[in-house]
Image 1: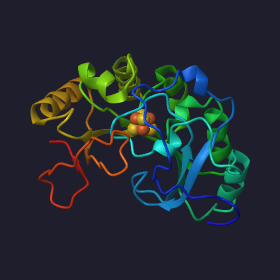
Image 2 (image 1 turned 90 degrees about the vertical axis):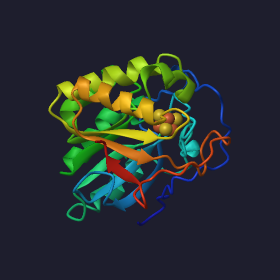
Image 3 (image 1 turned 45 degrees about the vertical axis):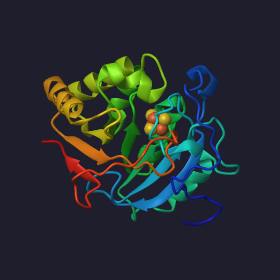
Length: 247
Ligand code: SF4
């Protein structure tokens, strides 16, 4: 880590949860608004040493989101994409890839050119997305090496979880587009009994398998700093494991 870059520790800072996200048009940016960066990670892009660039802003408001500081429009002062790109340029030979995470990276119309900038540095490109913008994801598929796509719930439970009508249609359209591509990926499901008790989790996995998903990873829901302060922790019988593959 060097220069004036700030590192996101994924800890919310003073966010005000709302039942519904802002209109996407109120958030969309022409460039790429950066909310933070993790200079080195081994867990955000399978098998690769990567940096993570957190993109600022998200149109959804998931109850369990613990990135409240990344949901609004404005990022930390002084942390611009050119600054981050300059940092990444100095990491050539030390990193394998760069992952765009968020917030929701596909919110930003400047993501495509940012990806091109990362490619010009010979890094592989990863993308974390909730599938909020299927057609933008479709356009990005040929430009990325790996995608982690969040599928959050059964379709009928999406609006209550994300605070956003129509979110299920968007997420499942993105799923279909990703599965029809040859991009390496994993489908990520965050498990909590409020929206995924065992019977619903079983149904969701059946649905995902039927759609063609093979690599499905279950993640333990972390309630610390969740947008919904009423979300309580729950014991899951995973030992100390935070993630595991779906049966
Ligand atoms: S889609 Fe992701 S970043 Fe957006 S509110 Fe949900 S969990 Fe948070």
